[in-house]
Image (cartoon, rainbow, N blue to C red; front, side, top):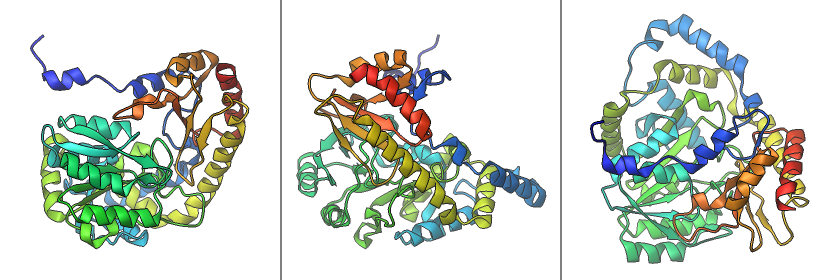
Length: 389
């Protein structure tokens, strides 16, 4: 076989994806993936949107379109972000095929080989994969129960001269931690003093379980020309649509769009128009009310049930929203060594070591609580108790 790109070929696949492939067995209950509950999808409503789009805009929907995205969708996204505290114009938005494509594009445009990216530790594995394709190097920044520590961030900037700081400040994946408003301002204060990009990933903020919202760090006007914010419809509409976006300086979006042209040309026209139609015919906030309530019920059921499952001395973060619980087992438990025992018992979780950029803690694990109803969560926890108890 002719040679391949040596660097990319050496990266290998995600061990998490490999583990989740085991969860395709219908007899296994998965607490592993970050998939929203399938029963939350408005299948009928989305189907009607596709039907209307084909009837009213059939030729347009099936034709090539702009790399930047359909104007109506860019306008709808900008309106939603402005409503959530991040003032945005339609021209500030580039539509992507899921936010994962946005991460990949940012990696190619912002990062050079050996560029340093500062991250929370642990952090989102797929972002690390996307940035690694550009041969970026990662350095951890100290965190606590409120997320990234501002003083540690400044020290790391001075020590490493990074190109970018990658953060998930709201319902972080994998820990579920949310950075409070006061700390967001402190982080913005630090970033405003240095010539470094903020890459703010925000896929979960709509899944809040209390009546409050957190202002994105990117909303600080001092960061207007060095912030790239990623959002998605995957968690609130349907991940199969693959609709995401990057919000950033227009001159950078132009380079991202040129890069996207070379990769995929455009995001699906019909999917974008169907998303616009659905948003026009539905009140997203009203749709989210029962979903949030059910996810909160599932979170509470898993939190309560884990007390009889995990060994004495464990700690658990109970998130205010999002999809994940983060547990730390007492020594000498190793969640990586136990995961295949869990699979054999008929349940899957994700060992926490996979999410670290440095100093991995084998005693940690991530559990998703949104994908299964309460009765199935109870069954899964009963199976998991045979592993840890």
